[in-house]
Length: 245
Image (cartoon, rainbow, N blue to C red; front, side, top):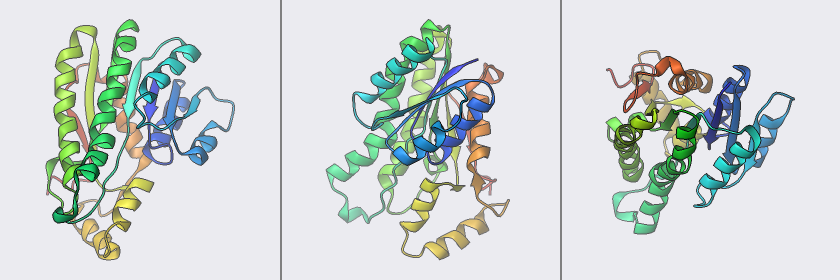
């Protein structure tokens, strides 16, 4: 039985991971500001904990870690699944808008890792997984901060993998492509030609479909589990082959 803290995405990938961990007999703790999605996850008698906090608030990482420790006595894994992809022309970006995207996509994952690291070490080690994106490996007009931050997560994972290895803590990333999730939908709808965007995206994916949140959860569960114990500082691409073409 492992205790895994999940930050964000309760209506999409984060929620799928919560359900997957709970079904596997683990003890997931999810923190998010989506009250409706958290209420749905909390239904039933299976073990797990849902925390209603803003994951971006500077105090939230420590509060979430402390809640997990109080309830289950330990933390064995951390999955940070926070995403924001604002779209606008280069000329319209302000320092405040740039900082907003980086706060979600890069700063918050760092703060969650910082808050959890000592407790993971006390548990004998564990695994940290960040949600990056295939956007880290390619360009995309109008979303410069998102692409920059998701690429930055790869560097953050490598740095922390080196620093935390003596404590038997592994740090990796997942790189989802087009996923059928609330975040994926919002990305498509932010484009004024969303229908054309969907059709164009599908033509570039060898599998000719978007990924499912449960398929992403499988990869996260693998990276959190001891089955990936010799993997750290690396990433898994989940995109139906899009980057390979």
